[in-house]
Image 1 (cartoon, rainbow, N blue to C red):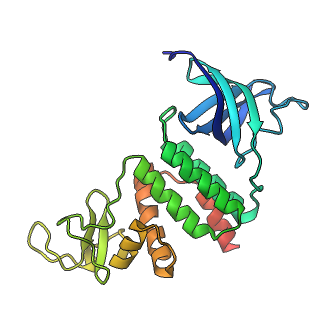
Image 2: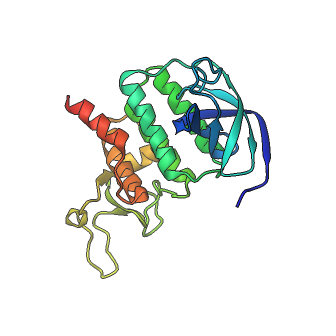
Length: 252
């Protein structure tokens, strides 16, 4: 069923994905600040002299006008805001990874203003040439938290006690961090052998993540394992194409 007609003007947005529609047009998946992920048809955008052709670029800040009441709205106008370097090389692949996460894990027209801000900062940091791993970890954590998955980091999941920097933890998807050596429901001490596919984490890593501090090499490595496990769980085990490309680049 079509929703109420909208007329949105001068709204901040980023292009996430485009694909051809009919002979000369595009369907554009946008991340809009107050509207979440929105699908827009850009009529005539594939024509050689279309004003939209050079504007609808990924990883560039835009101001958009659109209208319509269905699932796919009509793009009326797009204005490039400038000030953002083009992404190249590994930074470009990392950007596509962020976009794929958003397309796969967010619902259309579900507003995420905090996630919009986190995405904008991640793209700008990639454009500045900052180290990629901390950028990706911060965005992954922001994404999980904004989707309602409150990743408990600073408190133990079973007791609620503060995480101890010197202790070692496993992380249960539905329960949060559990300190090794504590007793489970059957009164048996939880040890590293119970990990299975779960990463082993230091308490300091969990505290660093809660404080948005990815300066330690151990924190970067362990947070990557933890966030990958949580994102895989959220994806239901479905693979990401951008992650495969990143892996192939690393192997080369």
